[in-house]
Length: 610
Image (cartoon, rainbow, N blue to C red; front, side, top):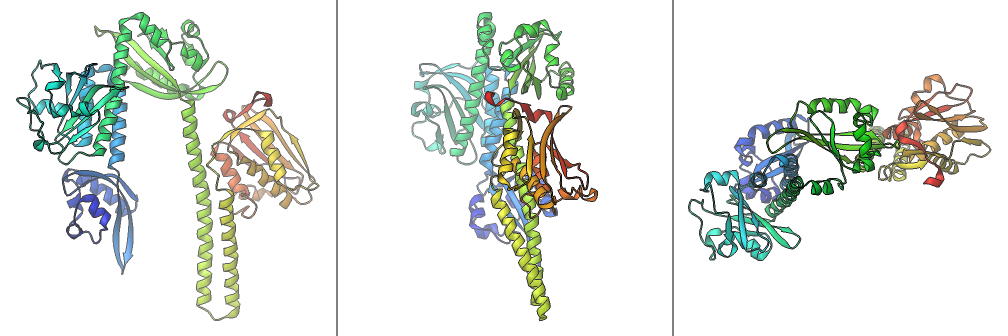
């Protein structure tokens, strides 16, 4: 049984607190989902996870809500209690499932009729709103006639629908189910029986208890209506949102389907539309020869349609070398698979630029069922990929900084706590003085750590971008007082690197370490050279150098703790964007750090072209 419940969980599930505290886990979850619920709870109790997502919970009124449950254990008077924080994620899950439905429909719509698309949407609408019946009908342009088109699978089972039903119905004769047409907004009827203006139901129709109907607009015109009914509980605004989202997405896809059908009826219209698509479209015949390729291929790949047509191998040759195996597997698979195939890969444009492509292809058949080859759509998603990589990079930076600060704070707090406990347990003045010194030193370290977080609070909030390497290093030099030490820059001002702006701190750290630990050094030299396709940035000083046994240790967390970001964080910052650093100098002859920049994140770009 539950030992405690706050007002929120009682309100969320619709139970009085006194009744809720007499209940157990099995009472608030659907029986058919208990195996899944128990597996999730077992994982929580074992400590393998701390949150169970998308757990179905049964309200007092019979409605099922989807919850995320965050758990922890507490010990009170020697007893261990399991606590759960319930977050209602029903609307989020419904929205996600509505989007997934739209994506799924988008993948299969080409092999469906309009009425099949509508029925598919209705089945999903019933599932997402817990309804029992559903319909999807078109409205004629004058908004005076309804074209009866589609019913859900459950409606067809529970209601009598003639094999050849009346397809057109006057709005004037329709009842409550077209109120949304008159009011031009979604309408909810949660007490259908009490409505005075209802006009009765057709013979063989199941009784209607509740109803939700949503109009679909095309600009200012209502072009269709979609409705669901007989939910066990009242319909509300959340159901309107789900049904509206499904309706809009389906209508968009239906419109696309009609456009594609119209294009096939006229070769002129086909070429007019196809030649002006933003995406790179082409049609591969069964023998893999090109039947058609849209002019947008030149925008995306840099090659004209004629170049692709005259060179059948060009499509494969422009695939980025590291992605050739992936693309080859795809080509092999599509000859055996009649389903929609999608994958992301990179291409090398004619001008040498590397672009990310979202590639989708599916089989096409003639009206007689003959296989005509595959339709392919290539979309340039480079910007989206860059955003994804920027997000990943930001998360890695956040993880890095929180890991460092958490480790340091916990260590310092432990030292302070243990020192104070030792002071509490002794009267010896010398011991008291010693442990107070330990605590003060740890407090100072903790203060430095907090200062560190202030200095790098923007780390991760700015995405990587292209910077001139010369300017980055020159800026780092200006941040450090080098005194009489000469700094020689042997770097072309045309070199750009794709990095986080905080890379400047890496070079600041190298400069500060040289000045602090290099002994009587007199000069520092920063240069670059190519190593295969990578760029090597060489940082050298003429100081005392670094002992062989310390070459790896200097990059550990304990080193550089009071010297800016330290070499540990410098290496981690570089690694997030794919760079690496190592020390290759000779003891007694000076330190030498080599920073390797991969080929895809450096380029030569003259300043006047920026």
